[in-house]
Length: 157
Image 1: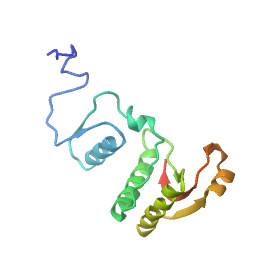
Image 2: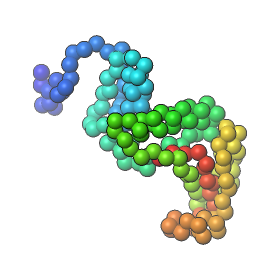
Image 3: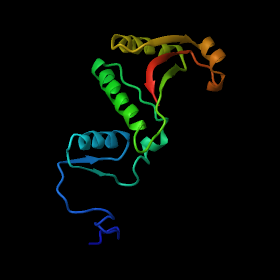
Image 4: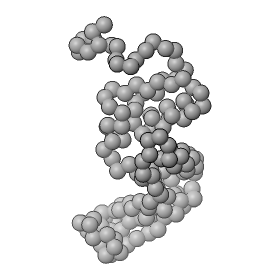
């Protein structure tokens, strides 16, 4: 049946089969959730308005970085293990542990970042404080003056 847009409501490959779960969004989070559900035997369908992994998931740095809460850090560690397993599967892709650099342009934001760094440390994430001078010396491609930053020891890409 044609929709108001002129497109058909019957998409190629779509069938009228019952499912147990519907995941809305085919980005990195939606696809990971769908894979996890399907691997547990849950009949799952992903609804994506455009192309799988073509929006934010397809245009960002691809970095997995947790927030500073213990539960989120633990969940990201579990996700990283899943990504590592997937990277060795039928559609191989590069997946590796990296560091992540959080930079502050001014002293006020650098000072505020210190309290965030403390929360990360409390959640078990290594955080190394780096001065603006060290960043300028070691990372000249930043290209602008910064007050300082923090190296996050637990991130993946």
